[in-house]
Image (tube, rainbow, N blue to C red):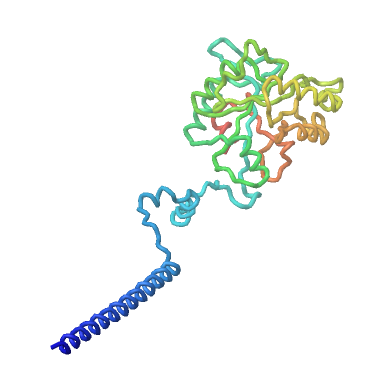
Length: 320
């Protein structure tokens, strides 16, 4: 009896010890499995980092503008803005830069001044010309575009024309400007500064879309004893002083019209250089002709519009 009890206790003790050993082995095995799994996850994370989820809407907001422009340009080319002049300069039509001087209105009893009859135009003829330009789709390039054209950097539309008027007479302001505005054209007035009354004429009141003002000198539109332009016989300092006075009147400017403008008499390389050193990029003469690429931008020709151009057909011949 006692022996049986002792045997049963030993058996139970051994059984409990076996259970503890098995539990310990299982625990160790489970721990090893956990460590292995953790290492696998860490290794996978290093090779394939987790990316945050970005919604399509958010992605659109952060797309660089440059990328959008590049993509658009690659898939849908922009229409060309290059004009239609032929590539060979000898075949171009040239750019007509028209030269007006004064106007008179017969309806008001006005007539062309006897001394300047050739340079005066019936205001009705001027309106007819503007209406024709408007109806036939002519464009009026800016001075920056004219400069680029002379330098061969751009081409201009075939129907291009530049309107200029010298001196700044009273009728230019009262008669010509309203018509230019009416027909949505553009004209540049080359002003003689000393003849402008700043009290009566507020240059800033005019819409620059239709009229701009450039220099015809301040006080050098005077002939010397030989009949040559005073600008050619005035000292360098005198020309510079005149430029400064004109700038005070009309503000910074880049286009000049030589007083009288006759080749060999009213301008020379000296005047060209002084003007260029003081911000001028273009200068015009009274030499008859059109502007072509490659010409000297400081000695450009123009096409005179005067009393002989009294018919519309005569005007068309100057422009077309």
